[in-house]
Image (cartoon, rainbow, N blue to C red):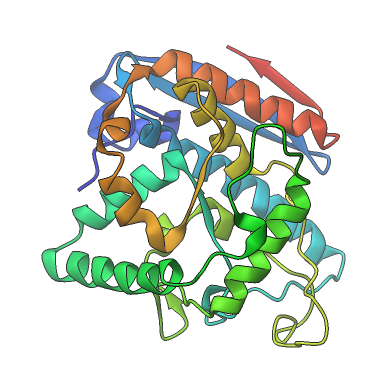
Amino acid sequence: MIANAPVDTVDAFERTAGSARNVGTINLELDVLDERLRFRIGVADEQVRLADIVPLARTISARIADIVIARNRREGIDIACRKGCGHCCKSHLVPLAIPEVFRLKEYIYSRPRDQRDAMLRLCLLAAKGILSEEPPEFMAPRTPTDSIDSLAFLSDVSKWYVGLGVCCPFLSKNICTIYENRPLACRDYFVYGGSNACVNADAAAERVKMPVPMVEVLGQLAGEFEDDDIEAVILPLTPVWCEQNVDRAERTWSAKTMAKRFVEIVGARASENSLQTVLSG
C-alpha cells in the first residue's frame, strides 16, 4: 500500500491513522464560475518528497472539474466523456509532471505481483514502440540561442505521438485500470459534444478549458524545488524514466514549505484565468 500522504485535505487526515500526526493547516479558497471552493489543507510536521503533493493536487483538480462540468451540463451543453469511452486513451499523448511520475511508479509497485508485472510489461511494450521511432526533425536538440514557440512545439509533439498509434498501457476493454490513480492530464481532459465527438476524424474535438491546469502547477513546483527546467514524462515511459532517476524520487523538503508554495502557485494560476483567489493560513 502507498503510505498516507503528509500533505492532504484535513478530512483525508481524519479518515486515516495519519490523524495522530502533528498536523498544521493551510487554507485555500477559490472562486470557480461564481462558486466558492474552500480547502483546509493538513500539513504534517515532516519531510516530504515530490510524490507526496500529488493526492492534494488530485483532490483540488477533481473539485474544480466537477464545478466546470456541472455548469456546462446545467446550461444544456453536451460533454462527450463518459465511462466506456476510451477514444483519447488509444492515441493521445499523456504528459505527467515529475511528482506524478514518482507517484504512479509507487502505485504500480504497490499492486499484487501479477498486476504489477502486467502493468510493467505493457508499459515497456508501449515504450519500445515510442523509442523505436526516429524522432522528427523539430524535436532535434537545440542550442541555447534557438527560439521556440512552446505552444506550436507541444502541438507538433502531440500530432507526432498520435501518428505512432500507441495505446495507453492502462486501458483494458475501454476501461482505465488505474482510474483512481490516473494522471492529472486525464482528469482534466473533457471535450464538448455527443458520444461520437472524438470519433469524427474530420473535425478536432473542442476541449473544455479547466481554470487551473494542475499538470502545469506540479511541473512548476517540481522545477522550483529541484532548481531545474520544467519537465514532463510521457505516460508509458514512467517505469523506464524512474529507473534512471531513483535519487530524485527520494529527495525531501519541508512539508510546510512545499504545501505553501503549491498553494501560492495554484492561486497564481487561478488569477491568470480570471478567478478571484483568496489565500490564508
